[in-house]
Structure formats: C-alpha cells, structure tokens
Length: 178
Image 1 (cartoon, rainbow, N blue to C red):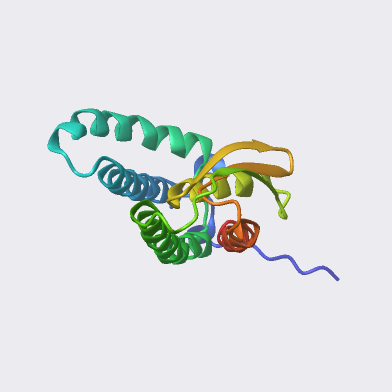
Image 2 (spheres, rainbow, N blue to C red):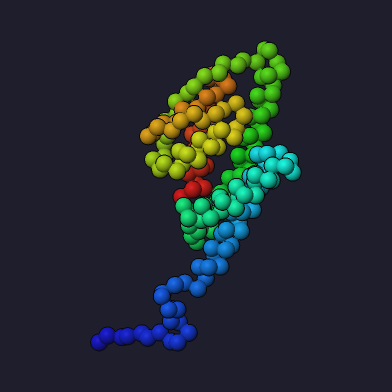
C-alpha cells in the first residue's frame, strides 16, 4: 500500500520553480555587502571625503561582482563566525602595532626581518588566501605569496614564534570559513 501526499494550493511552487524569498535574500545580501565594503573603504582610507569619489563607484562595482562570484546562501552561521573573528583580528592588529612601535622606538629591542615559509595545515585554498590577508593586517607581517601548501610571509623578527601565531590564526579562519 502506497500513501501519496498531495500539496495544497498554498504549498505549490511558483511558476518556473523559483523561490519567492530569493530576491529578498539577494537584496539583503547586496545591502549587507555594500555596508561592509563602505566600512572597509572608510577604515583603509582614513575617512577623507575626497576618497569617496573613487570609493562609491568601486563599491557600486564590487557589490554585483561579489554577488556573482560568491552568491548569497543561507549561511547565517558563517556570517556570525566571521563577525566573531573580527575582534580577535583587531586585538592581534593592535598588539602587533604596539610591538612594531616599541621596536621602532627602542634600539635595544631586536629587529631581524626576513621571509619565513609557513606550511598550511588546512588544504582549502580559500583559507590560505584569507590567512594571507589576515597576516597582512597584522603590523610587522606581510603575506608575499601562496604556493600549494605554503605561505610566504615577511616578518619583522624571525626569532619570534611566527609559525605558532600563524597556526593559531589559520585555525580561527578555518573555523570561521567552513
């Protein structure tokens, strides 16, 4: 005996099988990305009014491009995890800035710049790129290149535990970007 369930008239899909909430999600995602890009533009440029002459068109082009390259999904947890990652990145950036300032002002503190090769622990390429960007935000470090399973990073002091710091940062990024 087979039981067959039929859909009522209010449960049918609209013509074409499209999801009626998809348009609202796209608009919400576009608005969210526009706000995020505007905040990033303000942070990176330091808020000068003249920079918005270039910033607004750049944001207007970046939003549809980002929606095309990375369409919105129901990824509420990923967004929350990414937001949770921001205070940690801010703390690392402030701490790194203080360290770089101390080294610049005190001749007794060592400065041994160099390039280190960090072996990536997570195989996903998006994590390597995100780690490179995050490492570049930290004063005293600059991501130079990503090769298969390694990241080349310029550091202010090769004697510091750079590998451990990068491994910790990579673990956080892997958690935030499933």
